[in-house]
Amino acid sequence: MSDTLSLLDLLPEQSVQVDASADDWRTAIRLAGEGLIRSGAATAEYSDEMIATVEQLGPYIVIAPGLALAHSRPSPAVRRTGLSWVSLRTPVRFGHQDNDPVRVVVGLAATDHSRHTAALGGLAQLLGAPGRLEELLTAPDAATVRRLIGSFEPEVQS
Amino acid sequence: MKILTVCGMGIGSSIILKMNVEKALRRLGVTADVEVADIGTARGAAAGADLVVTSGELAPQLGEVKARIVVIDNFVNVDLITTSLADALREAG
Image 1 (cartoon, rainbow over the protein chains, first blue to last red):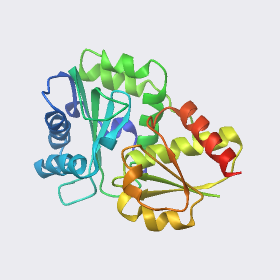
Image 2: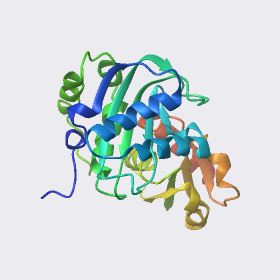
Image 3: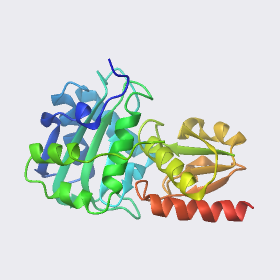
Image 4: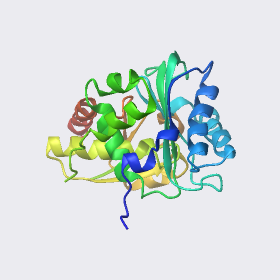
C-alpha cells in the first residue's frame, strides 16, 4: 500500500460541487464541509471547526486570488484524510485584503501532518499553473473537474 | 540556512507554501532547510530560523521574532515567491 495519496484519491466525485450558491463565507465553508461529510472524510463538527479557524485567525485560508483552502486541525471530527471542491456561482468575500472574492473553496480534512503532503503539492501546482484555475472554474460538472485534475501531470519533486 | 513557513494549523497552506518556497529556492540556487509550523508554535520555532515566511493575515500574530519575516499573499505563485525571497535574502546579506 502506498504511503502517499494522490489528488484524485482524496477527491471523489461526491465531494465536488460546481456552480454552488453561498451568501457568505461561512456558508461557503459549510458547503466544502458537506463535501467532506459525503465522502466520509469528516463529520459535521469539522465544518464548525473550519469556520472557527477563520474566526480565530482571520481569512488567511484565502491563499491565492479567488481560492480558499478551508481546513482545521486533525481532530475527532476527521475520519480520514480527504479533500472537497466547491466552485461558487457568485464569488464570496472572506475579508482578505488581497485575494477576495473567493470563487472556489477547497476543503481539507487531515488525520496527520504528512500523508496528504504530496496531494497538496499537486494541488498547489495545479492551481498555480496559468489558466488552469479558470478552466476548473468553468467546468460544468463534478466529473469534468475530476477529469481536468486527473489530466494534470504534476512536475516531479526533486 | 533555516526557513520556517507558518500557517494557522500547520497542515494546509503552510505545506503548500513550504513546497513552493523550496521550488523558489531551487530556482535561486539557495540551499536551506524549510520547516512548517502553526501559528501557536511559530514563535518558538522561529528562534533558530533565518527567515519566516507567512501570509499578511498571520504575520502580525507572530509577535516579536528575530528572524526576518517575508509576507506572501499568493501561496501558489512561485514567480512571486521567488522574487520576495530573493529580495529578503539580498537584504539579509
